[in-house]
Image (cartoon, rainbow, N blue to C red):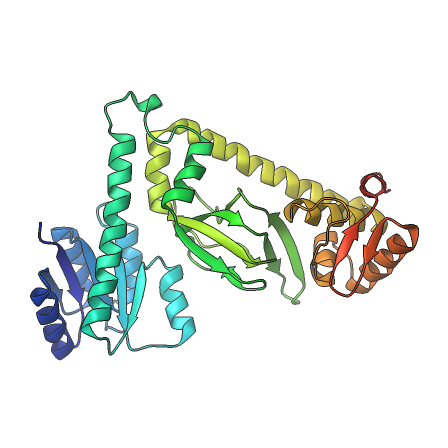
Length: 352
């Protein structure tokens, strides 16, 4: 079956040339000369994929994506930005809004067709998986993704993989939360920065944990930032896809609520330590918290920035360093320039 492409481009010459390339490649092409017309045609024709310019009058490409992503009939359509902008911040803005890919102008025919085919193949694969898992003739409560473990397997098998080096940003405060992640490898730090520039670590996440929850259904922004504490691999699916999975099986929704509740309890406990614990107890609990996030056993090396430890403990970095020195002298930990090793876990757990 011939695939239909909606091309939204205000430059007449580029629109005509791109249309000719796509038609020669065997695609049916619908064109729109501006964002408003593009939105209307996307809802009317429901194309297989959308190519959209960013810089357009009235409604720019970002606005087109945001409107179509929030509409139930168009939210699944793969969306590729076309733009002459090559700056990293512009590319990143498009991706955090939920774009599936980004092609900079001028582009050649091979790159354009390869990107389109890649996104169509991925979209088709997800559709086949969902159709098989949700409509295979079994009763609803026995079909497809039935519990949290099977949901994690779905992320692992079908999610889009991404890798981040230590210190790299995964998402920022204020970004649109179109994606939910499962951590496959590495540890992630979530944090907020106050008006004075002070960093507060809000959570540490380890492998087999979800990342990026804000709302299960709505496209709200992230209320915190996330960075890789070590080399990290993530598997991601669009939030709109998770919404459909949850609609098919309410048991998974309830299990996710339990996960979120557990995370809230951890945060409450952390805040209690920060508010009422002694400096020694705050430092000890933070060390144990990082050890769990890094999945480290006693005497195994942990590479932890002192500023991150201080942020979790809620104390000044200088105070933390003095406390670590005391722990080292007492034999509770070993410290060198790059690493910390917990030697006496029991003593840290009982610290008051």
